[in-house]
Length: 95
Ligand SMILES: [Zn+2]
Image (cartoon, rainbow, N blue to C red; front, side, top):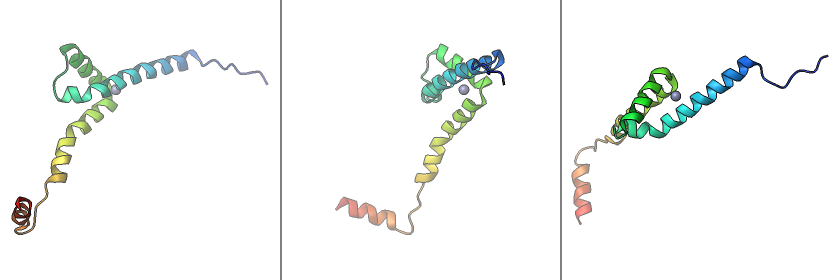
């Protein structure tokens, strides 16, 4: 049996390199996501991120999930008090 080369094929190497580059871009995208949503990024960063979102489904999904967080929080904290409980709690807190 011939000894197999440990060196990855050119195609595998290219794939590894493109994954690493994509991962670096995704990492950067995840870092800036909050600022992107809050619209406080520089014009260049915003443009770079927008371009990345066009080509990266994973980051688009992350962006959509991130944008959904405020609604999730609103729904989670939108508690209806039964009867006059709210008024009674207020009265108790004022004492
Ligand atoms: Zn990405």
